[in-house]
Length: 107
Image (cartoon, rainbow, N blue to C red; front, side, top):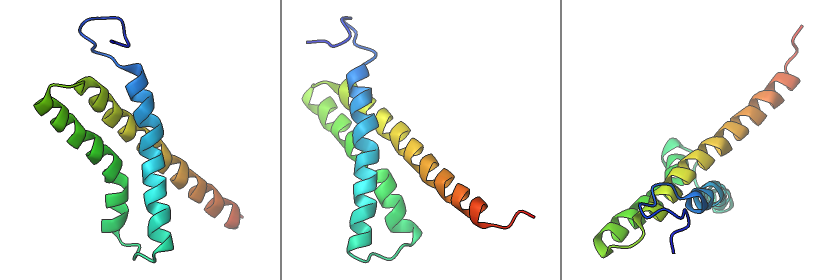
């Protein structure tokens, strides 16, 4: 059943929401898991945690293309994961910047 009601199915809103929720959730859980197992906080593991949810959705796009399934679902999930992860990173950086600004002595 096509969610959009169009035969082409170019836009898939529920899939975008799927990625918007699962992308940041996957990133946050990967970062929390890295903290519990004492992974060194260098750039490689952190970038892997940021890229992993989107990469998983893009791999599912390729599998769906080969099998002839709902490619738009996985593609919009990957797009939502990118947007959600970007919002998560912006929120974390904004929080850290705000805390640093409050702790600094502006004058």
